[in-house]
Image (cartoon, rainbow, N blue to C red; front, side, top):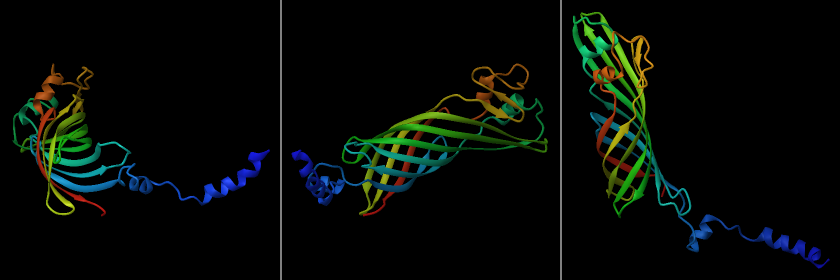
Length: 230
């Protein structure tokens, strides 16, 4: 048949033809530029002084205007009420001088959508690990209270060029974290009432009031971004 004699020539043309790549399409005006990445950090207020490291990817999907950002950070927070925490998790003793400290380790994944030439809306997921330490000096009590929370975030970010690759970032917004089990010493309280070794008739609401675990958290951040590559 005629098509069989023409097939080898067709294969030769196909193999020798230059491949259609993203660069070829871009030159023709039909594709996004190659993906680009930037790194940087934020410093500011998150119910306490916090800092974050971040990495952002853009133009990673054809025609998708959204950027993706990974955040990792630490925030110093108010740990809670030492006397109340001691009653809810340990005992009713009041001796000793309380020293306290609180912090969260935070992980986030955001999508950023352009609102204008300099501003972007961001929204995404959060995961936060809270830890409070209460040390009653002279009272023989030193204990930690911990919890882990999933949450959501939203806000607006503005970018101002400081050079060919460097930009100043200003961001504001809020984060909301869902209720989760609170654990201290050998006691824990859960939002669904599945408590372990609760003291007296205390419940989750008492534990929640005793410590400064994240719920609503406002954001006011300043940062720097540096674009990698050309």
